[in-house]
Image 1: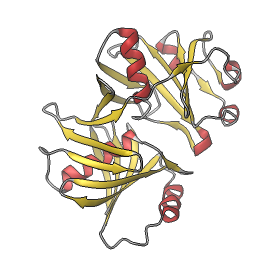
Image 2: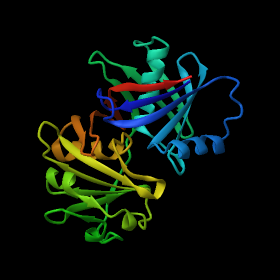
Image 3: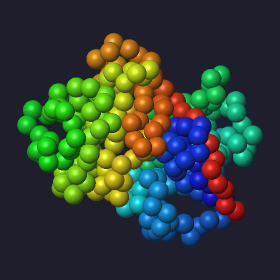
Image 4: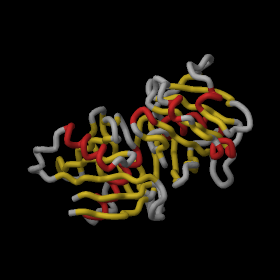
Length: 264
């Protein structure tokens, strides 16, 4: 079965679209190449492939249009939503086994599905390898700070309106030796912080809602705002809402989803 799910939203054509392919036990022809070809064909920000391993336990892999992703929040949320709907399971946790560990997902009383991810530490960058004005325009002034890990740059702006107004130069962003560039700021009305996520190097010119980015953003803003529980907003064209909770070395990311289409 194959599903199209809008994740981190309850409105069709909002949030982040994810494909969820629920594999059968005899789907032995699903090689990594076939998974990648399907992801490239559909050109959604991510497709998750899940295969049942045992009771409430599934193997999961994620593919962007150009490569296999090391971690993906919204496609995991979409997969959890599909499994809970098709299995009529709303009370018991689900465990997803991936190449680098596992993710547990459960539905809480607020009807959000919550997933446990590892904290991703970031470090400050004193001399970024890029020129900010080359990769973004439309912003009133420059950035406050830049942080990084092995996969992303995080650029902290001085106000939320600049996150929304920023115009990316995808040609220049592609030159950066990172998987993605994230813009973020506090001060978005009704939310603790907001962000946008750009990854043209892997075929995602702008990811509508990136769950895994919040493994980095939640610890940063938690320290700045002195909060463990926060409400986050993705300021993309489609928009999306996430609940994030800091629990030691884990980031709990919560969201809601809606199935837009299914194929059998």
